[in-house]
Amino acid sequence: MVNFNGNLIPQEEAKLSITNRGYSYGDSLFETIRVLNGKVIFWEDHYFRLMSSMRILRMDIPMAFSPEYLETQIKETVQSKSLTNARVKLQVHRKEGGLYSPKDRGIEFIIMATELKEPFYMGKDQAYEIELFKDHYLTSGLLSSIKSNNKLINILGSIYAEENDYANCLLINENKSVVEALNGNLFLVKGNVIKTPPISDGCLNGVTRKQLINIIGKLEDYTLEEASISPFELQKADELFITNVIVGVQSITKYRKKEFENTTAKSLLGKLNAHARLS
Image (tube, rainbow, N blue to C red):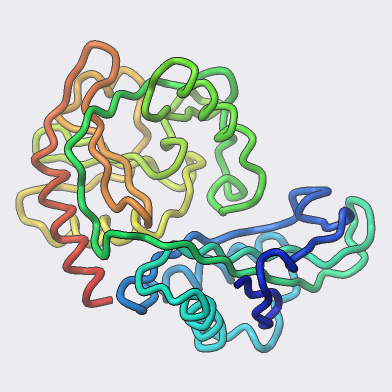
């Protein structure tokens, strides 16, 4: 089942017009959300990021779009597929009409759910080699921080990674700073300092990124820095890891000739699981 504007319908009956603005112009946003044992984890952060992103794109937010309403819609969609643990995609697009200038700033929404087998973040030990993707740059600034449907750089980077047998790639901005991975935020560990690029560099305002920043900020053994990361710092790091709401924490094992530890990443993964249970 698919939830279209609050109505549950069979997936094969869910159709979009060819003039849909998300398709025609990328005039759309989405949230990737994890449901754990029927509970929408980190929902408050997802909700406020969605509202903030809709305001940035100057979409008209419906009065009904309360946290309670959308959370209920997510849960009903998950339950309609008899799922306990699920990956949910909540997509918002502006209503049809107009060219670049929309005829109607109102929105419609779609919620889809697929099964996740593991209830918690597992942190699998596996080779995970990455490389820089330098064919195209992210642009620093506010628009890059939202989850819009404009993901061409991520698509091209994913093709590059697949063609060259890399597990992932790191994206850079116009200032040649390392911004994020294809599918999540980047953290770098050097000694007792953990760095992650600032939002102003163009990285996604990630929900899991926010959770880890809060967790690290309470640790006595580490200092957190939100600061630009140069490509030269990557090979000097003790650890590199990627975060997103589905995987949690993904350790990078190799970048070029440098191989990395994963001690800090494993510790943070355990703390993230505990935090998720309490959210």
